[in-house]
Amino acid sequence: MSRIWPVIKREFTEMVRTKAYIFGTLLGPVLIAGMIAVPLLFLHAGGGGERHVRILDATGTGVGQEIAAALSATSAGDAAAGDLGDSRFVAEPVPVTGTGDAERRAAREEVVRERSSLDGFLFLAPDFMETGHAAYEGRNATSMTQMGQIRSIVTQAVRARRLNEAGVDPRVLAQVLQPIRIDTRKPGAEDETGAEAESAVLIGMLMAMAVYFAVVLFAASVMRGVLEEKRDRIVEVLLSSVTARQFISGKVMGIGAASLIQMFVWVGFAAAALSFGPDIARSAGLAAPDLPRVPAQVAVVFLFFFATGFLLYAAMFGAAGAIATTDQEANQLQFPVTIPLLIGFFMMYTLIADAESGTAVAGSLIPFTAPVVLPMRSMMTDVPTWQYIVAVLLMLVTVWALMIAAAKIYRIGVLSTGKKPTLKELGRWLRTA
Image 1 (cartoon, rainbow, N blue to C red):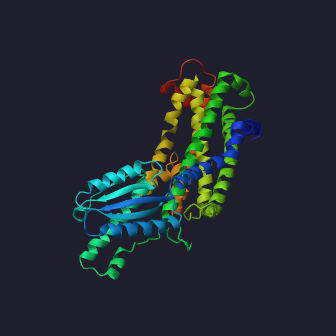
Image 2: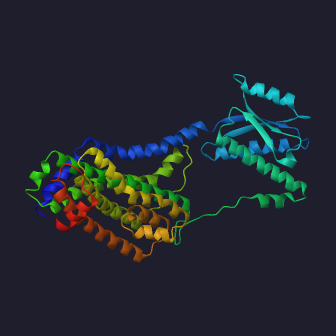
Image 3: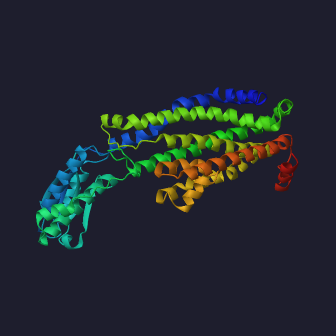
């Protein structure tokens, strides 16, 4: 250990002194918060406000009056609730006869006129009640949020009209149309506010993405460092003082310690965001969901598999750096090394569909995918204890084996120049080193 420590200290010091590391540690949480908050602010700024809509009713049934009343009343309630992007509509019903061509033309001219208060018009054809087909023209016709509001409210109003014409009692009608609310939570959740399962999925996905990008970013720095030392012939001096296994282990642990410190800062920021973020968002006038509490068990799983996942892939990247002779070869080797982790990243879709499926369980146990899959799965469902034990043991054994293999490749590879070794030559290195 006395010989490994100087290598760990050297790699750790070089990593934490870089401007990129300092900015990433301190400004990373700010950038993450900005990536989440800025789109919400723009969405809030782009939506809302008052929109004037004219209802041209050619049905002769008076349904336009009912749609206008429902549109004005319902949208006002939604906007008052603070839903992002929701607008308050002021609807004006206008009965028309025949095809209403003159009224549509006049409304169209008014919409395109500068400083006009009319944002758009909805035309209900004479056969609207039978076909359910309407036409909307307006300046806000490309707004998916506002068009979704109009479609939803018009659909509810027409459905209520049809049931009323069928002789359904208004009180029964109100009860039938009352929306159903289902609170979803994991088994055993005691939170009275009902931490929603959808929010747990979102938190799990963010954890998986953080592990993926952080492991790839920091582990790749091991490969670049090995390649640089090999190219500058520094490694020949270093290997005169320590063995290849001591050097590669110290290099991985030094950079890993720096990455863990950065991850602790990010996790601390995430914990604070989960605790105070919704209250801050609501105080700013933004709608924010009640985010679920992240159990301490999940946080431990996340940090453990982040650390061991880094060691695993750092060993593989270190071996790739010892094999490569140029930056181009190193870039070519980087993608094959990250394929297993990328597969784990894509397993998120399987977890969303069924966190208890055989694929999800296998992804939790396989060491190359567990750093991404298991923290997300732990957030979404109750993972059996035996699966945690098996995943931990397999991860530790795999990391140990890969560190030995990487040291053997490193011992010969860093002193080899010229062409990249073949698979047969790599096998001979592993057997003889």
